[in-house]
Image (cartoon, rainbow, N blue to C red; front, side, top):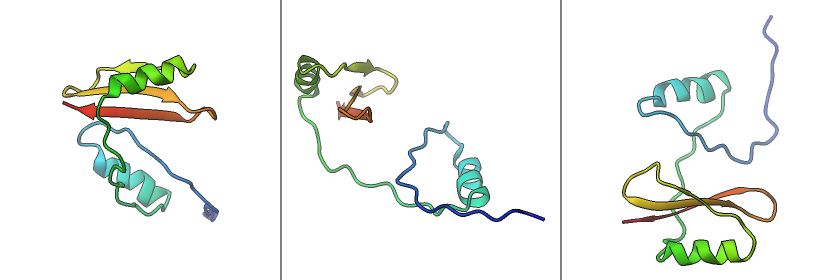
Length: 92
């Protein structure tokens, strides 16, 4: 007998998967866990001058970690006062 389960609430899930992993990802999250897929939201803001923003955050005591994982963009991470990881990027 298979035990039944349900989710009361899921705030959001952001997934990092390798290129070509969409089918396996959907099979796990949608098929196995039964969660519906929602479209990605469109960015609400475009950032121009990301380096001054990073300097401002660092000066206020929020450590900034730069990433060069994706060519064609300046990108950094920091945390808000509650420990939520934030990503900021500016396309070249």
